Length: 370
Image (cartoon, rainbow, N blue to C red; front, side, top):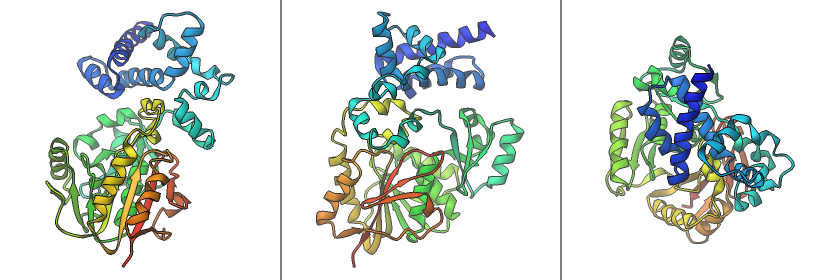
């Protein structure tokens, strides 16, 4: 066991070394792990070590400075293995929770989120109801000796990162998607029959909407990035999802338009701890407002525009909505009459999603006045 752990330490150190040079933890893991001969369980161990290094890097930097230890990749890995972060309670807030001063200032008013953002998250699967069922996915995971946990959502099944290697993923019976993202899809499909996923990316929410509705609603998806759009088209075919993928913003009008906007991603910091170190919202609020204004042009009178993003900065959430409401002809809807509406923490400009295992998402349902 000692030899195995030493081997895993070496691989984790190699990943950390690349991360220190180039950033982008997820890419560093993808670049290195597939080239190893590790089992899926061993890959999970390595990934956990690397996540801990990045999750606590600000704290570890301080500890290394205090001890006059050189900031080498192996030094960070050793601190992670020792669980050095477990003794951080006496440090100031930004070191105790290992985040930027900007994020710390926001979290001081949201203490219920601080520990949560440093937890190891489960891997959540979205069941493809067009090819399988929740019961079948759970049964398959159990047969493959994969961890299984239940969610409050009809389509969601909890597992760990090794669940990504299950046959349910290979056979397109499910795809990896956070619970909060799935809840955004539930909200969207409950507000109308003709739906446009305006910032579709590689299609996570388009797939979950097709699953939730069992292809019984009219779904369109638009993505400006050609490479992502090609991936989206292929995934829709693979998952038997009836989604019309648009190369350009469609001329049609829609009952519901979903804007899952690009953002700082701090609400997903459990999975991507680099997000905790952003020093401000950057130009995201301007980009988000522009996308929202463009998407609003595709909503029918009386229709709904949904603004969602996995962050909680005031500039990207209520700040964008305040600006949008000034000239848009929309108002914030107070009607949350759909399944799982009890999982929303409502405020004046929308709501934060309160799914027990999900990312911290903000969502605003905007109604176009007739």
